[in-house]
Image (cartoon, rainbow, N blue to C red; front, side):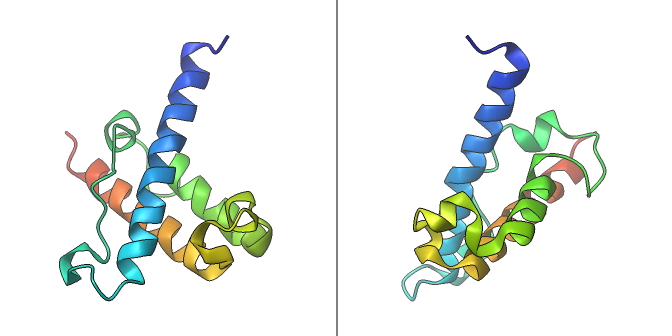
Length: 108
């Protein structure tokens, strides 16, 4: 049984795994409109729940660091997400993190 904190962490991480493939597709697609190339609709509640953190803290920046450190060995890349390309995963994670940080900045 998950406690509330574990549930929130998994929920937020799942939303990231919805956003990152969307950003990967849009950034590497000839059919995606230009305005969608660097923006995801899957920000989710993480931008609000982590609203008081600085730009280097929280799940999204942690995910960027995780992808950067593991690169081609990161489990979603090994599982052929992002076409098995660590650079595409890093780009998608970075864009997702930038989107989340932007939403955080709009919180009061």
